[in-house]
Image 1 (spheres, rainbow, N blue to C red):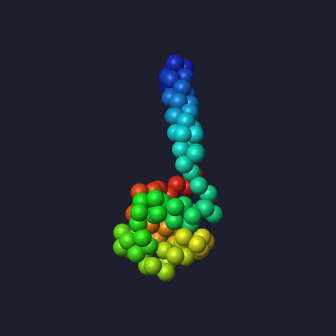
Image 2 (image 1 turned 30 degrees about the horizontal axis):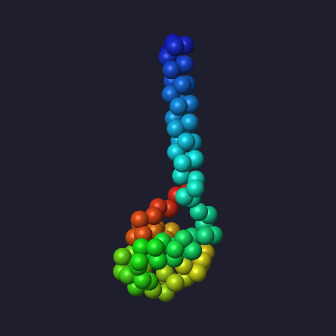
Image 3 (image 1 turned 180 degrees about the horizontal axis):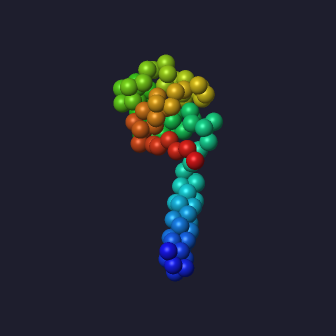
Length: 95
């Protein structure tokens, strides 16, 4: 590989890194720490006009589990949390 090709490859890599960082910066105001996930679920459910029972049906998660999630139960399985978030049109992001 020539010096020119190496330089082009380095520029491409730096561009991809900058592009990811810009994307993360745009998303930052919408991110919430895991400690706030229960409140976020409740807030989004109410904003969408859904009852607990309706969200249970949409996410296929039990009523009891959903109540625990909304109260901030830290031991929820990721697959259950992901089903609830998907039902609300939200995404679980780890980074």
